[in-house]
Image 1 (tube, rainbow, N blue to C red):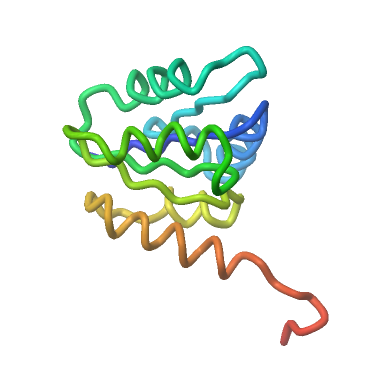
Image 2 (image 1 turned 90 degrees about the vertical axis):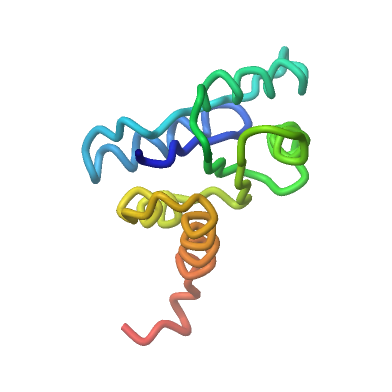
Amino acid sequence: MSVPIILAGHGRLPSGVGEAAEMILGPQSRLKVCELSPRDSPEEFGRRVLELAHDAAGVLVLADLHGGSPFNAVRALAAGPGRRIELVSGLNLPMLLEVLLHTTDDVTELAGVARAAGRDGVVDVLESTW
């Protein structure tokens, strides 16, 4: 079974990144979005993340901002008992594309792919060799 990928973040950012990825790769059934609105409590946001995770054994959550409310809500879930939640912050399009193209069912390996792609996707064009 494919690892579900949940994009978690402020406002419409998660939807925008998800839509951009699907524009490039086509529809992605394992991709889910959880957006924080100004009206949401952290507890409500966490409940929505769990609903999106459904009954998956492992879930990868890509959060927009390290230390932001979506990140903190998911971090609290990941620290609790039960399902395995891997959480990576710094959501960006190169990160998401690499994760969606990777075929592993190992959520820990997939989190490593996300971290590497997120870092490698940031390039100073003045230092680029191409």
